[in-house]
Image (tube, rainbow, N blue to C red; front, side, top):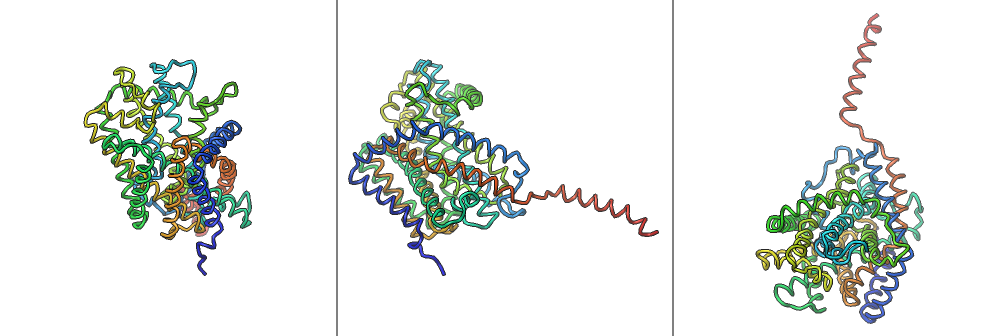
Length: 521
């Protein structure tokens, strides 16, 4: 007998909590924002060290699995091949919300570090500050974030495609927590709420930046009603996209996303200071590699630590909060790839593209401020959402670039909402790979509502706070997931390669040849 959605405890509990948050945020916006800020300060001051250690352990675990004998295990049958071609697969990784954040922060982050350096010893707005800014931006958008996504995605893919089980977080934790319904429902409800907060942060960032672009091009102003209009437009477009399914809507829009992003990046690369971009990219890559361990474990116990809370800890908490969503989505589109392909592809390809994007757009903005006195950094200090469009004002075809950027952000928002509601629908329908439209639309409405509430309650600060607070309980679950992944993958039979079969056949033939003379005698 088919179980109805309204009898699913995870759906009922998670939607009820999100609805309560929406109502509280709408009725008491000021108090809602103040409470969120207090929680933000508490979690970062008391548990910031925990976030850093969790992410570091995940990186070591995944690298160990990739180079181990288990790396050849295929996510599916041994004859299964990747469901999506490589370019589409990479585009789908970006459609999981990553692209929205990168477009927002690609210029804003390095310019923020340029004006307010991560280290007090560096002079602001100097060449040394520019070097540190680009290297630290590489670190924040490098393998650390994607390692968190990869861990969740790997165990869900193993459950879906190797064990033919549902891809729920609670099922992944069964080797550790057991299979009691109360425990499973609690874990899945935590995962759903963390996902909602994480994706609401991403949607909110995109809305802020799109509003800035519309104001720059069309002079619409940056009022709350404009942001609501953008959210409604995204929701309408997402509703149309969601009716076409994963193989059409998200797949086609993901290709458009990646194509538009690469087109914009290439134009800025050739229209901007090309040689400077190449040099600064090489230097920043070296700084990132050389400082990786230092930055990964950096804390400020002898100071306020406000910079780390606002940047590194925010990014790590953001990644942890929406790792159930991103992990489940990349698992869904990675069927047929080996464990090694999955880990290397997820951990290194998107970060590589991100670093190139940051060096092209962020590097061009740094060059403009250093050698053209454009003062983009001061604009970013006032409103980070204006960063990208302020850069475009210094380049040819400003209006065309701005319109294309608005289109890129909009398509990213649509694909983010589409993929997020697909995963939330799956998480609240017992792990179904084909959640009903009603469930997906319900989550689309709730995500739009919570994003609007957070924007009204405090804008960027409220968005950052929501994702960070939601991440704390899930960070503990990530450690348990790492242990569960090791237990699960060790039980999988190792793949038999064609070379091994051929070697065994030759040995068998030699054995038969040696025994033949004795048989004749």
